[in-house]
Length: 203
Image 1 (cartoon, rainbow, N blue to C red):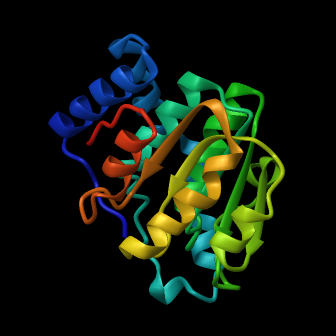
Image 2 (cartoon, helix red, strand yellow):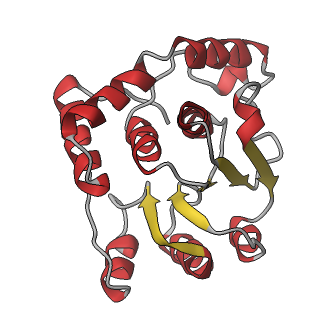
């Protein structure tokens, strides 16, 4: 599930981040470059991949793709709590945790049903990351901490996406941002945004 974005598409992503966060596009481009050039992040990725017993299932190149947008949004909004569903190997979690560490504040909770999930997340990124193994809808429903950014990237069925977003709704802080990695497949986030009186943007 990893891929690169073209230079032009990275520019499009910077403009999307700028619109979402109301920050200058030049700063958004700088944040995207920051994560793409993060040598510590790359070292952790490569060492953990090499050590893992799942390395045969892993990509050996660190291709962040649109996760660079998650990083830039976190850098811009400085959230206190980021919630990610669908940890998988943990590349997205690493990217989010790297942004939180750069900010100097905030924590990440990431949820996956697979007991082997999250093996990429190690020090220093594990210092700001809590991994929950279990059903994401159940885990979200039991949370008591406010969520400032929610990233849906788990089961990409329409029904599961709806269930996660409904579960997180009571836990969203007043200015929370909701990101779905599934908006190219379903209209769930678009319809929910309209029902809730929110703005919807697509990259």
